[in-house]
Length: 198
Image: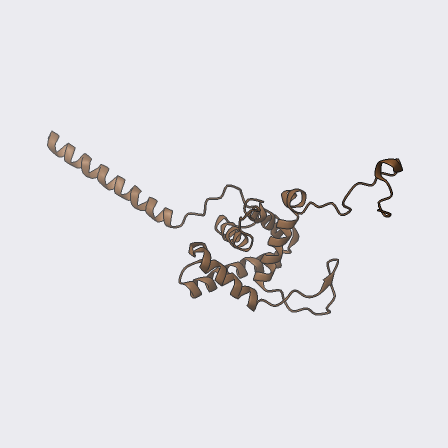
């Protein structure tokens, strides 16, 4: 074997090995999980990303923080892991997949790839089609046999629960003084006068 053949064979070998690596990377890239800045405890990365986008569409960032900024997707993920039975967890994941499939049928693309207007329109439609939650008081359902709760209604209620129970919303946005003004028990009358007489 001469030097020219060795160089030619080496080049071919390297070309094939690089091509195979590039092709395999291309196939892997098509199936990669969504990248998140947090680690889900129950949902897959793609499912958690979908929940995050649904929550952010329900409560977007305006003058107030959005659902993602307050960690609502993490809250939902943790609630699903710790509060639902295995059967309910399985049903939730199946309903999440059906939700995305329905969006893909309506918009010709999955929810993640839809623009803001398409997402809002799809969620408004889902909200209209979802039945109302059964009446309850202090977590006790007041109806003997309530209808099953629609998937979107469940996600929406978890989103709102996570948002309004977050520390930032509770301390900075919803903070109010239920009794405005201060009560000063011992104050000289000469300082305030008879306010009701003036």
